[in-house]
Image (cartoon, rainbow, N blue to C red):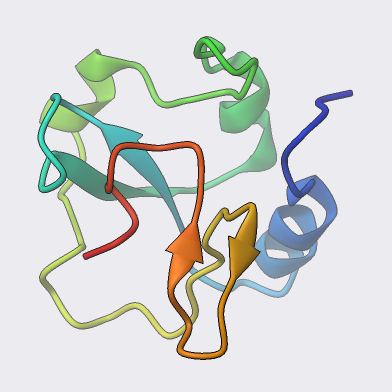
Length: 102
């Protein structure tokens, strides 16, 4: 079990069971704009992803050539953003380097 991050496994499993489209992030560089979102089609995909330095399963780089980045396509209805805290203006305090701040 991971610690320090919101657990989304049940939410992802349920969304997939309801035939919802589910997209997960992948950081591909060191700049805040270097975040892509790719579609996953089964929970077993996540279980087979390598874990990043936070212990979170993350899509392997090789999958990016097989799937489209959907961050600019306007098809995402809900985003669950990691954060340590949020202020009354929805400003985010997190652990990252601004990937989710844009």
